[in-house]
Image (cartoon, rainbow, N blue to C red; front, side):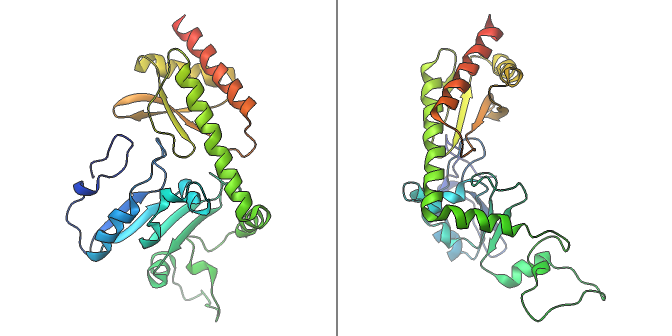
Length: 255
């Protein structure tokens, strides 16, 4: 475990001594706050020590494909491996997970299976690059999404998610009884109420009202409402409706 700052980013000075036997895990999009580690600063030193650097970019790594938000991922190319999902940001089917690895031998060694009945082809065999031997061609749906959206489409999609998250945070911050706890840098908003009990009861009531769906989490030892704006179809009106649902839920809880 390494100390982090108020947004959940690894504090570079707190990283212990690294060597070639170390795996350093960084994040492109903290699951709660949406924050990004300082890849450029951390990765340079880690590479010099021979450490393996992995970046968990489940939803946030797509920031690298945008104009406005790519600064968040500066230096991420210095890592050894990366993981990113298609469904969390691009809205592809749920099983569109991607692993990127600089060392092909390491990737194959960690995933391939052996057996006398397994026939190896002369070309690139997919079973050596995934944790499954039997699977459908999930890459087709991801490819179709990328082909349809293109660079401009992905840029617009991510920017819209960010703008709706900014709107959500602003409207809740202006409402009585809610406190936004994070700097909204991507699509995540963390909110708390006056007490942990009120926060948890408000989450349950929001889910019951069915205007929007949110889950709970724990942040700095405090119960929070975790908001992820993750649908390309979300509009300004949808955010207004969701915030009104928050207000109504809190009013019923404290009333």
